[in-house]
Length: 111
Length: 140
Ligand SMILES: Nc1ncnc2c1ncn2[C@@H]1O[C@H](COP(=O)(O)OP(=O)(O)OP(=O)(O)O)[C@@H](O)[C@H]1O
Ligand SMILES: [Mg+2]
Image (cartoon, rainbow over all chains, first blue to last red; front, side, top):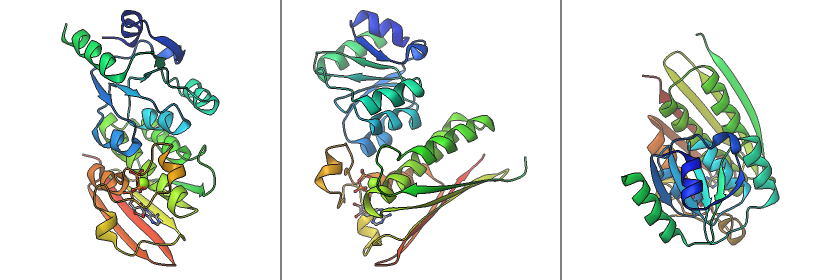
């Protein structure tokens, strides 16, 4: 499933990374501790988190994350937005909690 | 391909710049046409070392050498050093202060991640003098 399809189906707000909407989502990972994410997330994962700082963008770049989904309307700070834009990282946002989004992603990936 | 050397000075104060060395190494390895797995292993390992320098050691230096069959990385700092390396290598052990935990650091997974994503890892440290980490990722 492409990032743009997910964005549409879950009515996510697109904050950055228009050029990465064609990325393929292969799985999903939830977590806020950055080293934990680098240990356990796989490349091509949609990453669900409340961490919208510059370091989470760095992690997404290095770990080949397909897109970041900020859950529960978590903020994306200005430095992070700048870095996400520079690196074409798709950052999406939802008002829903991580669990709800993860369940939806799982259903969509299962189709 | 012969050898390629990259050098970076890591600023100890600046969290917003942490990740520049690993990001730059990642771009270079991509240009060299290495496989995504190898690039990811090196990039994550360097990032963990780089961020440790910023959080725990007030900065340091990173050297990366790309040879036909291996990528060597040397991370050096003159920070406080690590008294008990085997303890520091354990998953979950962290002395990270609260202000960096708020940013998502401090899981105590950085050094274990370096071990996980490299083929060889050596760590030397002397309290009061500094820490040196040598990494190898083979190009299969
Ligand atoms: N370069 C260094 N200089 C001094 N101490 C270090 C250095 N690198 C790591 N340490 C010590 O080893 C501990 C474990 O490091 P590790 O990277 O595994 O976890 P962390 O940095 O605390 O958290 P995380 O990496 O998960 O965000 C650190 O908390 C710190 O006490
Ligand atoms: Mg660390």
